[in-house]
Image (cartoon, rainbow, N blue to C red; front, top):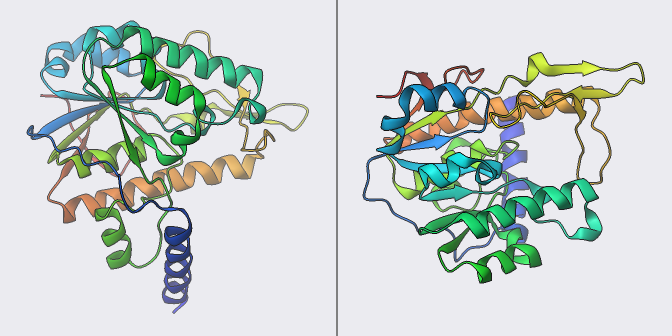
Length: 287
């Protein structure tokens, strides 16, 4: 009974969010003729995957995420799809710290200068309000922007699956991998392979003597120099430990929701990461 009441509540809240926040038109309409793809996460284990499976990776349609373009692998692999999700990438300068502004500017510059092939850049609708992002599109004729709804949809299974199919929203997108997988399903891939999705943050959490919760979020391009940092929320307030753990909880829960949804779409998701804490998707090596 408690679960039934909760689903009614979540469904009602989701309906309100859809009408207030979701865009009903101009969502991603990409359709692939290929059956399978590889999603490249930015976790440290990608270094092992690319060494051992570079030829296999090159044979697939590739989807990369967030800061991948700052690495030499971007030029080398020339992914066909790229998804940007981090909120800091589309915030105005007035609402961002100098650190985040510099991170965004460096990334956008790399994408603009390096991209010499046709690239499908998938971004949430809020990107349309970013002057820096719109300028990126103007500066590079090879980049085609595609927009998606990243509204969190929750409630009864039949309701959320219909919303997912109509691209009105998705499971809570607390990690870039969630919208990436959802869009890969929408594009039509029937086999989705994921590499570089370590998600090993639980072992990287600490609390310093000032009672500040820290997380060392390592990537394949900065593993040797990354260090524990405070996680910031939308108002630049350091997250408390229970907030960090809750965010991770929602991320891992989201993968189980996606796994269940993928079966409805006759889509198989494989976690081919060399190291990974994700327990929702079947594990196998690339082949």
